[in-house]
Image (cartoon, rainbow, N blue to C red; front, top):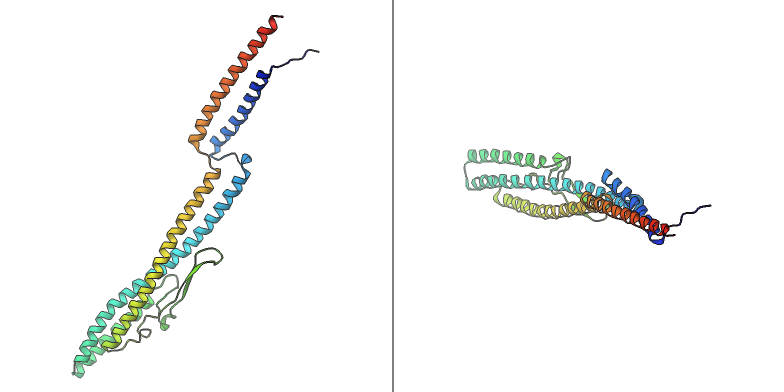
Length: 260
């Protein structure tokens, strides 16, 4: 029975061609679907899913933080408007205290009452989505707000509401009362400003972390088309060289055989 015997060099070349053929198959799949062959990196696929899940959780957390920030900003805008209205109230209170005319004082009282109603309206309209940090009792009362920085409630910021309508400010027709109300508005605005700054910083951090996780998840499984294209060219060149080597080796073996 005839047998065919291959030299060591020929066997090595044939093995190299087979390996290159398998590598080309993987490379073509990656070029076709834009993802790495996960059969070669199951752990990478699992890790990618884990990173993607965490990025999704952070997206939800970012939405909660952004919503809370909008609520605080709405309350701050309301406080700013109330502060400006109190400037008008102080001018009226000053005139009232300086006047001895009953008719004039009655008119000023009416004007002050109208200012108080405007303040009540501003406080009532300074909420978002049913959450109002400065509403008075007549509008349901000021809400407290707690926002979680991470899923599961680990790490959070609590913001206490402060009624800032005329009743919450204990507003009366006197310069001293108006000045006390203005001081209360400034203190509340400063507190909300600190909370807004913290929320804004946390929102930016959460977005940056989410982007990093998404990039990492994609990097584990997505194929680099430029890299894969270059690899395809290199594999093709190496396959051609191996085929040429095999042809030369086979020709040499035939030449040696013909000598006998």
